[in-house]
Image (cartoon, rainbow, N blue to C red; front, side):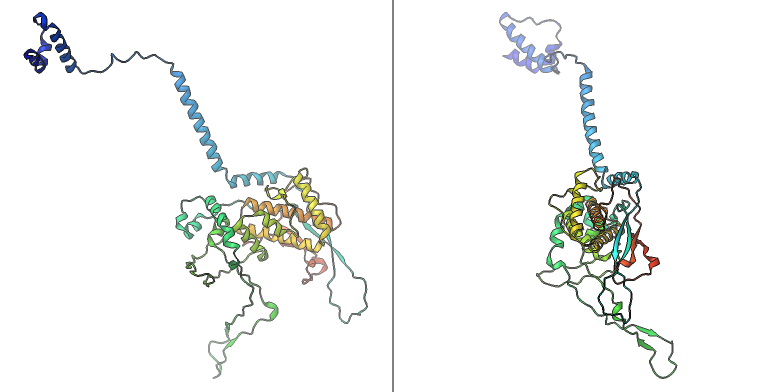
Length: 432
């Protein structure tokens, strides 16, 4: 035991002995265990002897695996990138390029019977047959789509700073989920009310009165009854129009507290805004809130289209050989047999007014342009059939320049024009 204690306490000296120790025979086993233990304690084991030999594998397999996985990831990344980059602007640019390649075709000419409105003094009261004159109106085959432009992000960030880093399309999708609730509420409809201008306008005739009578500032005469101008008020949310209209003007920020009780009144700023066709602005605003193309199409036509009409799915007008074109022709024949050419003409000009408003405001929603194309195609065919023709030929769909629309100014019951100015040119897309 003493020897064992000395060997454990002095391991370095035991290892440094070059010759084996001469110990008694009964201590040989103890010394061997002690020396091996000492040798094991002093050595810094690397555990190499317990590791099996490594087999050499071909390096090509792992390298090929890495390359294939990288290619798959890169391909998926490229596909996702293409999906993000190929936005509505790229799709619209491709569609517009395809429309430009279509052959140029002459406009559609429609003859409409117009009753002359000549002033006759002391005419006889004897009944007689009415005299009608035929007027020719020319319409483009399709309405040209406006050049695609992105909305101003500065306006959106100025309205709500919390939306600064949020994509524009995500904002539109979020507004769509809230649009029906915001705009379809009965409180959002304003009642028509006649408002009198009580402010008196003063005109200064002279800087100093010629006499002692202070009659220089005189109130201007009230305008006659015929000069009254109809003004329509629409309550809107600035964010909705800033997110959809690329040419919408930047309005002042309106900080209005939310009403605490139902039925309470709030004060909103009134912004004067001029549009090419104010009558169709309400339908355009309703579409921007809900983005329901089926509702807009039913509002633009004299009667709602058949159930399941696929016209609002695509953005371009249908080709003559497609089923959709056949459905449009059948529906146009039904409209031509139900409504007069004058009624169809008014609906057609209403669609033209909606198109002008969309161009002026810079609305580039694919569903909106699809509805305009389908409604224009149906109404144009119906008007042509009701006027005596079989159908407006659409073997080719050219993007006929609709910047100038030839309209007979004598079609209106209130306006009378000379015979020489029957085919007047009306600017279809005036500046905002």
